[in-house]
Length: 325
Image (cartoon, rainbow, N blue to C red):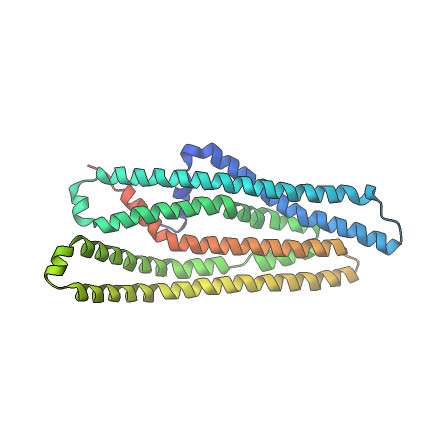
């Protein structure tokens, strides 16, 4: 199953509440636009102040007032929209999580005994709980952060080229890179291997706790504890390299924030000397750089979350795809 397949299948499970999901998606688009407009409007305010100071003319509310009002309006809208999206996204994710757990439970009950003879009870319980929890996280982060970040990076980032193509080009080059592909290709297989050990661990614990009379009768408590410790060591040895790659991705993304800010400031100062930009545009693009790199960090964090949850979601859907006789 390709990496994006479980992601798209999880989103398709929102079908019974597709109108609410569509409304939340539209709200995210509006939220991304408002957060994009705020730095630009603030830059206009700075230009008005700089012009008044440079020309020696008196500053008039008629000139700066509309820009301040628009900036404040977009800021208030972003706060209200953010709270509204978070509230309804939470409720939607909680409702769908219990629905998919109930669907999984009912589906497993109708599977033949040939399936249950080869599928361990502890593994099925772990797949149901972790799969539903993983879907909950995908739904919640999609509507709270991921969709708005995607709109900002794919749609609004190229729009900066219209405002000032020289400064916008810096953001496009620095923020959009190949980092995601490198991380995805490197860690997907490694995380799957780590989750295999995690499932073996769940099976072992379930077997031992379900057979306590036999364990105590044959005095196997110490042997089972040692066996569990060996399983834990193998699981950690498989998980640690994945965590290292994720940490490197996070560091690389955060370092790009510093590079983007320095490059934007230096280029902006040079363009100002050439008369190709204004102080307000420099301030606006500094804010845009901070905002867009923050969105990139959210995207990287979401990709890392999907990498950790993808094997669990695959196992959940594998059981759901098993046909009852």
